[in-house]
Image 1 (tube, helix red, strand yellow):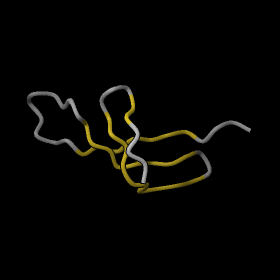
Image 2 (image 1 turned 45 degrees about the vertical axis):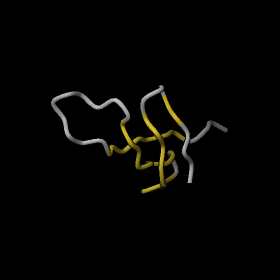
Image 3 (image 1 turned 30 degrees about the vertical axis):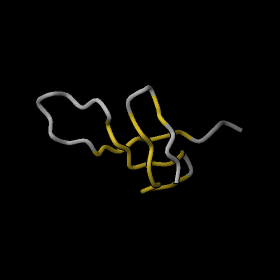
Length: 50
């Protein structure tokens, strides 16, 4: 499991989906909007071009 930090805001967690175009990871939003109690989000990552 990756614990990479993306954009200084999202801590990448486990893969929740995978396909030909890339992966979707569960991530924690370390800076959620004040009006939102949600911290868990989905982050899509495109597969590298070949």
